[in-house]
Image (tube, rainbow, N blue to C red; front, side):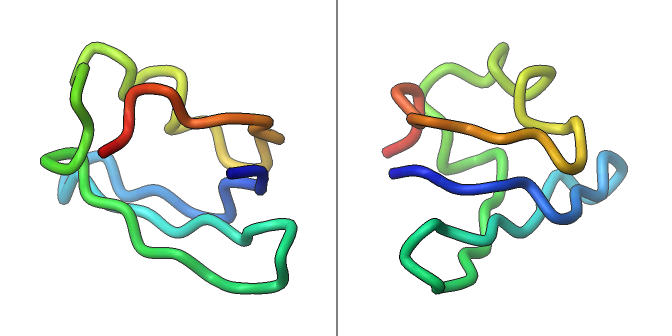
Length: 55
């Protein structure tokens, strides 16, 4: 999956990603295989080329 983090609420542990496919995706930290990767996710506006730690 490729996309951009558009928002992330650290206190609630969720955010939204706009995928390069034009879709918007909800993400909760509980869906992450490796929760230590949360720090890599939370930077709003970050371009992400892959999400290897997500289910």
